Image 1 (cartoon, one colour):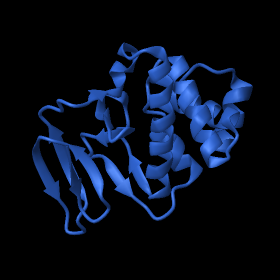
Image 2 (cartoon, helix red, strand yellow):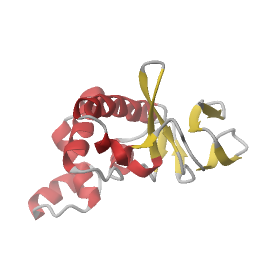
Image 3 (cartoon, helix red, strand yellow):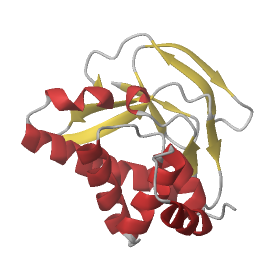
Image 4 (cartoon, helix red, strand yellow):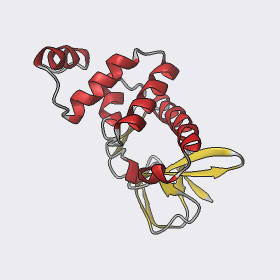
Length: 170
C-alpha cells in the first residue's frame, strides 16, 4: 500500500512516520518506519538473477519517468529506493525525500547528478545506465563515463577532461 503526496501523485511507502508538505502540495520530508511489502534496492542481490534484471529494467524506466516529470532527487541511492511487486508489475517508492527538487526540464547534467548517487556494484549500475540511456536515446558510453566521473572513479586525465566538458564542468 502506498500513499500519494501532493498533486504530482508521488508515492511513498506505507506506513510512514511523518509527512511535511509545502504550500505547493509537494512533500518535503517523509520518514519510513517500515515497509513490509518492499525491500530497499540495496538488497537486490537477494533476488534470483533473472528477477534482478527484470527489476532493474523496471527501475531504469521508473528513473526515466522521474526525470521526464522534472523530479531531481539529490539522495537517490539504493537505501532510499524501495521495490515491490503490485498488480503484476515492479513498482518503486522513494523515502528520505527531503533533498528533492522539481523543475520543468532537467538537463543531462541534472540527470547525471541524480544517477551518480546509485552506488551499486558495477553490473547493476552498468545495466541501469545502459537501459536508461536506451530509453532516453542517449549514448550509454557517454552517460556511464559522466556518472563515473561524478562518482570520483579514478579515470585517466584525458578521459576525465572529456567527460568534464560533456557535463559542463571545467
